[in-house]
Amino acid sequence: MTSAGLRFDLIVRGGTLVTPGGRIRADVGARAGRIAVIGDLGGATAAHTFDATGLHVLPGVIDAQVHFREPGATHKEDLATGTAGAVLGGVTAVLEMPNTDPPTTTAAALADKVARLKGRARCDVGFFVGATADNVAELAELETLPGCAGIKVFMGSSTGSLLIADDETLADVFASGHRRVALHAEDEDRLRERRPIAEAAGHPRAHPEWRDAETAQRATWRALALARRFGRRVHILHVTSAEELDVLDECKDVATFEILPQHLTLVAPECYERLGTRAQMNPPIRDRRHHDALWDAVGSGLCDMLATDHAPHTLEEKARPYPHSPSGMPGVQTMVPVMLDHVAAGRLTLERLVDLVCAGPARVWGLAGKGRLAVGFDCDLTLVDLSARRTIRSADMATRSGWTPFDGMEVTGWPVATVVHGHVVMRDGQLVGDPHGRPLSFIETMAPTSPA
Ligand code: DOR
Image (cartoon, rainbow, N blue to C red; front, side, top):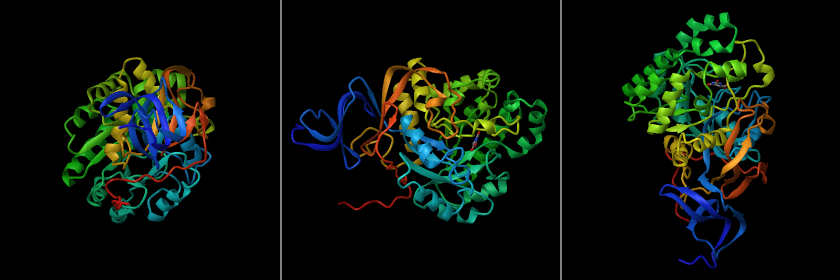
């Protein structure tokens, strides 16, 4: 087929594409926000052309766990600043968590979040609905609403008020609805019992002792047992311990799980001595044994996906004495450079990274049109320079919290442009154009569109 005479909205020329079939040198032609052609578009024209010579073109990177704090705590982040950080970091779609104020536990709260995207979000966004003892009866309905990514359960308390600590209520959640349930797996009873460890220590180096590996494991075992009992698919968020991985290995029929870049990059106790409460998050950064096991799960293919748990708090809030300091760290803008640096160091291949941050989240959460470079899929692209050497700086972060735990980290590999729905939205560290992000569509709940 000759491309002469063809016209596109955007042509990305001459990059090395990471496709489901392998790496190929080809052009990408976008029309009406989707990938129309992959191939040699030498004779074609376009409203916009991007020269990707020397760059690798990945499917748009998805961060399936972010806290953008709107409404309720917009001094930490909001949907505009959070999605700006996303596209500056090469991320084209995010799933946002329900522990806002008010929490996303009703149809009205979800619709309010979806409405807030218009003209402000720079990438696509889906929202989790939080399960509570009060909304269990409505969950089956709530999970079908536009923009809903699924149901999220906090089994242990973290930031915000959402919590389901007992198996009876959790069983009711699993019996209501059918989509995959996202779980923050820390056992609340054990957290309460062990809180004095943190109070006595008064330093975040005690964080992985207070919220120890057994705290995570107890909750994960409970969640998996209930998932089997109800035949309900689950997703264990931010897995941190070697023992959980051993069991998840046997649960591929019912459970998916994710690992975070910070658990692959920071190690206890060093991170707590160096970063203090900035390294404090739930579940915690653990020691080398767990760290190595997480890398094994990346290498073996066991791990389904990565996500960041982008959880901004201001440095002033972080300066409160531990354990009164809030847990969480920003991450949406640094996932791509941090993970590309691991690629450059030979810890995983670029293909495996694409599996973990593009295809993986799209598969786990059923994101329509996302996750692969293929005709018919949304033209969301993350263009990266694998050989660029840069330093991650807090000053360059768009997050309203103004910091990153990776400040000063020298990396090899950097996102240099981001394309969302066929529009270049970031180039060389600068935001481009107006915000046009949309609510995400989910395969399980979308009505099929009729042929034009
Ligand atoms: O460290 C965390 N912070 N873990 C969570 O699960 C919640 C998050 C937050 O929202 O601050």
